[in-house]
Length: 233
Image 1 (spheres, rainbow, N blue to C red):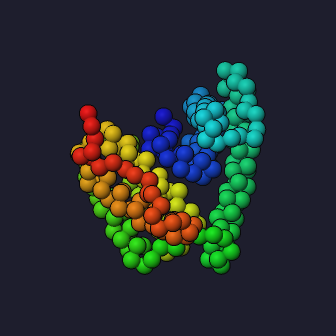
Image 2: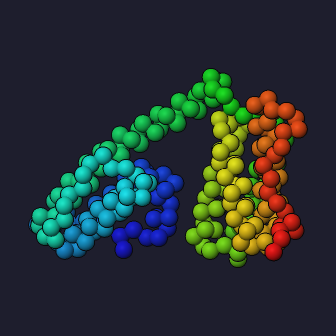
Image 3: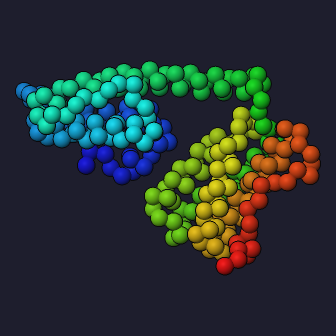
């Protein structure tokens, strides 16, 4: 296979960059020095085209171009697919620039206080970082999760740690932990308690920060995550 399982699992995290990487991987395997298109080249090109079409079908990455029709002839299909990959590469480079510009604008606006943001206390930032580190250690050594699921959780926690600052523009990624903990709780019960306890503490800190920023009443109820010992069979 041209694309390994690890690559396929992380495509959804950054589709534009992943499509560019997929095209680069494909081009690196083609024998450009030979005359014409070999059957091996054709196989690589078909895999790349299949990946792009499936990403479009799944709604992960929407292609603005119509893919070439496959005739089954290497000499006809290979140049058509190669040209299609070139169009996609140019499109993705443009989209990558737009995404970078948007990210820079968001960071600048937040830094200049031109947009609404949530502000953690210094103590909260330190505590959340500690809890995220503990979660990464627990999950990396846990035997509860399948390898692919474990890898996805660790990537999410690593990103959260990198983005955990005193001021943040949104809290959505933190609330996503609540769903992960709920799944672990439902599947593993008391075995997931150390993980769930830390997620509960993190979401408690996040809720207090959000409630304060949005001027909610001090007694506003927090989204709850039942403790493992509250599960009823």
